Structures are given as C-alpha cells and as structure tokens.
Length: 448
Ligand SMILES: Nc1nc2c(ncn2[C@@H]2O[C@H](COP(=O)(O)OP(=O)(O)OP(=O)(O)O)[C@@H](O)[C@H]2O)c(=O)[nH]1
Ligand SMILES: [Mg+2]
Image 1 (cartoon, rainbow, N blue to C red):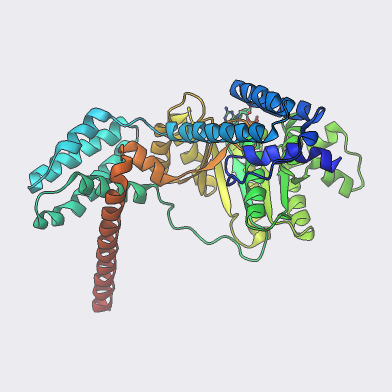
Image 2 (image 1 turned 90 degrees about the vertical axis):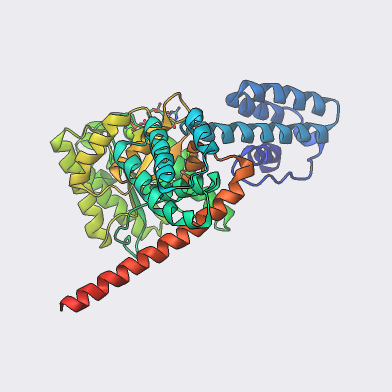
C-alpha cells in the first residue's frame, strides 16, 4: 500500500512550494500505472486548470513509457506554480504610485529645502498608499532627519532617499518591545477576531506550517495541539477537527472536558462548556502530552460585545496564569478588506488584552493589502502572517522588506545599492540612539 502511494507522495513533495525542489529519481513506469494515476489526477484537478493540463501531459508521457519526461513536466509545472504564488504574494502589497516614485527618482536634492520637498513627496506616496497619516508623518520627519547630514557629501542620490524611507518604514513596521513569553512551558498561540475572518482556517494552516518547518529542520515528530474553544457556533469544533486531521495535529474540545468529568458528551452539553474550561483542559493535555505548541481557536465576536470581550480576556488570563507569563502570540485575525473597522476593533480589544500580532487573511482576493499594513502601523501591531488562499499551504510569514520594496518600487537593479545605504543609515541611527541614551543617563545622574 505504502509502496503504491510512493509516486503520489513524491508528487505532493514536488508540488509543495516552500520545500526546496528536490526531484527524486524517476520511479519506474509500472509504479505510475493506474489506479495511481487516478490519485494524481484527483490531486492535480483539485489544484487548477493548468494542473489539469499538466496532468494530461504527464499521463500521455507515462502511457508512452516515458515517465522521466512526465516528471520533468511536473517540475516545470511546479516552477510555474511557484512563480504564480510569488506574484500573488507580491500583489497583496499596494501598487506604488508610479508618478510620485518617478518624481522622486529624478530628484537630486542638494539643499535642506530640496530634502524637505523630497520627503514631502514621499509622505504623499505613503498617504496615497493608505499607510495612514500618523505613520506617514513620522516616517517623513525621521527620513529628513537622517538625510540632512548626508548633504555634507554632496547632492543626494535616489538610493539615499529610498534607503532612508526603507529604514524608517521598517522601523515603523517592526514589533514593539514586549515582555518575553513564558519560558519552560508550552508556547501558546491565541487567535481571536470577529466572525468569519479566518481564525480557524489560519490555525489549520499555521499547524501545518509549524510541523512542516520542524520536519525540514529535522524534527518530524513536532507535536501540535489545537484547542477548540469556540463552543458557541454549532459545527465550529468539527471544522477545527477537519483542520487538525489535515495538518496532523491533535485536538482538545468540550467533549474532552465532559468525558474527563465522566459525563456524556451530547451536543447540548458540549455547547454549555465554557471556553475557558476547554482552554484549561488543553493546557493540561499539552503539558502531559509533551506538545511542542498549543493553538487556541476562539469564537468570532464583535469588539463592541462587552460580554464576549470579557470572556476573551478571561481566556487570556487563564493562559497567562497557567504559563506564568503571556502566550507566545495573541493574534488578531483580520480579513484584509476590512481596513478601518479593523483599527477600531483592535483598539477596543487592545484595552482588554495585549494583542501582539496580526494575521491578515484573504489577501488572495481583490482586497487592498496596503490599507491593512496601514492598520498595522496605526495600531502599532506587527503583521505576523498573511493568508493567501484556503489551502493548507496558503499561509505566509509577512515580510516587511518585500512590502517596503514593493511600496517604493525598488527595482531589482537598485536593490543591492539601496540595501547597502540602508545599512549605513541604520548604523548611524543606532549610534545616534545610543548617544541620546547616554546623554539621558548622564542628565539623570547629574540630577541625583
Ligand atoms: N480566499 C481565502 N479564503 C479564506 C482565507 N482564510 C480563510 N478563508 C475563508 O474564510 C471563511 C471563514 O473562515 P473561518 O476560518 O471559518 O473563519 P473564522 O474566523 O474561524 O469564523 P468564525 O469561527 O465563524 O468566527 C472560510 O470559507 C475560509 O475558507 C484566505 O486567506 N483566503
Ligand atoms: Mg472559527
């Protein structure tokens, strides 16, 4: 059975976009004979219509006894798929305002006034890209402060402007300092957000990603536990169960609480179990079972619902108390198209519990990713993940560098020079900060 599944597993491996592509030695044509081709057919047809076309090519190659050509065709297909995925991720970021970028590209500021004007243009670019007023003001002001001293060496180059913008945009998107997560206990991801944002799906994708990364790093036994703390919505536990199976994770739900108490786990009884009690049970299980990570799914709620917000805070408190420190991540899951309402809800929830990261979902749709990065900047919460589809592989870590390059239209040919300038400016910035801190310390000791 296992042997007969081998080509299918190899094909899955090849199609996985984040794995380095290692084409295995071609299996014998006999192994690719039906009914295995039916399995392959199902997998590819589940993907895209291009997959279907590729399948036909492979099937014809195998039928004519040329399996190597069939596999070569798979490789080509994988390369194409990876390219599409890369483009999809790139496209989630705002399209640069090319007229403003061109204006900046042509300037060679040689005076403080010209530097101010260039920073003003950059600010307009950020505002038009929905980065938000506060963040745009801050970046433009810091940019001009970094650039003015460079005038001593002559007129500025476009790479100086880009580099200054990049340094300060990255600083704006960088995570703020926060207390370290609890040590020596299971890392917990608590996912929260309004109804239908993609919490459960993100948990499934995250579990898969964590397990796959661990396996790539040589730990195929990485154990993920999911906690089904959405006891309100009928079907929510079953939905998470499906994701647990898909991702190779275990799950604790209200039924486990009831069974632990020797009670019957009827649907009615399960719905009556408090989410906090399920979380408590999951923490027990994670500890006893030596799990590597615990992912907590919560029910959808509006930030205006004070009762449900209190309940979320209670879940957070239970975790914090049990761990002796905060969860590793308290992640607010947002549908990327819900820009302004996201700012309001994150601000409201932020008063009840510290949100440490955002997961932006549905960025594969037509929604504007830029406004959500504006949200990240205005909420002061970094984006950790982006969802780019409904599949188990469709979760990406947010790359602020790629975002900023896309926003500023940094071209391939310019990248090395810009990044070199970024390093120079960053070093100068750090030195300046250290000097300021030193001066503050001296002033404080003089006051004593
Ligand atoms: N296209 C796309 N769809 C997504 C993505 N993430 C989630 N979805 C879809 O969004 C819908 C809602 O996802 P769920 O994970 O059930 O959302 P939820 O926040 O858990 O919903 P509630 O539990 O009802 O609050 C589902 O149909 C998902 O398949 C994404 O990144 N891209
Ligand atoms: Mg859900």
